[in-house]
Every structure is written in C-alpha cells, then in structure tokens.
Image 1 (cartoon, helix red, strand yellow):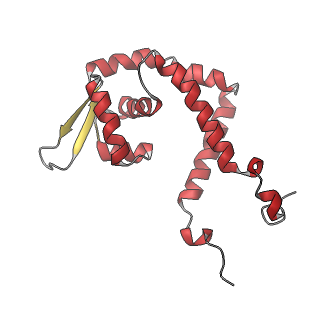
Image 2 (cartoon, helix red, strand yellow):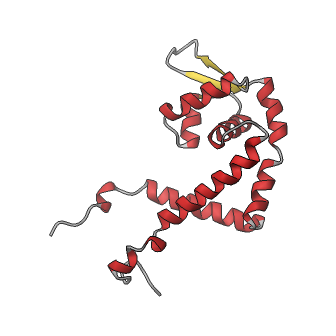
Length: 161
C-alpha cells in the first residue's frame, strides 16, 4: 500500500495525485449544477447558502452566519446586501451594541424557501450517489476540514537541515 512516505516525490507532485485539485474540480462541478438548479430562484450558490442558514436558524448575528459558512465579513456583507435588495433578508443593528448586526428572513424570503424545497433532491440525484454514500462523503469531508483546521502552520514548513 502506498503512503505519503513511500510514494516518490516526482510521482506525488503529479496533478492527478493532488487531493486539493480533486476537491477543486468537484467544487467547480457542483457550482455549475447549483447554478442551473438555483436559476429559477434567482439566487447564486453563496446566496443560497446564506438563505439555508437563515431558514434553519432564524434571526442570527451576521458574525454567526459568517462562522457557519466560513465566510469573512468582507465576503458576507455584499451577499447580505444583495439579498436585502431582493427583499429576502432584513438586517438590523442591535439596540444594545451598534456594532452588532443581525439578519433575518423576510416574508418573501420565507416564500422562497418553499420554492427551494426541491433543490437538495435534484442536487442529490445529480451526484448519482445514494443517501448513505452522500452522508459518508459529507462525514469524511467534515473530518478532513476539521483535521486541516487543526494543523499547526509550522507542520507545513520544510524542515531546516
């Protein structure tokens, strides 16, 4: 069995050996499928993710949305602004803390949820995977993300010799 320690450097450097590229290619393919699936809703994939969080959790601080989606405020703010302009989301400043902003779904945003109900099934069908395989893949990718989040950056630097 090949391991990272036994694979020759030249072989390990090949594009088809890069897990990052496989994940990148899969993400691009998903984005294309979602683009079509979300066209009728008038949402982009990142906007859809914001709506999923708000539909699931209700009113949240913008910071909490960013944490759930792994987005910084510079990326999230324009998404929320566009969703607000479309009438799907309302943002409010906290009366207790002017720096804190919350977001919630409007009535139009709640109606959009009904229209979006079929999207996850269409995406699942497009993968060709059964529900158990999708759950396994999500679990494995979640574990991978957690592992990578926990990496000490010093582990990635070449050893000085």
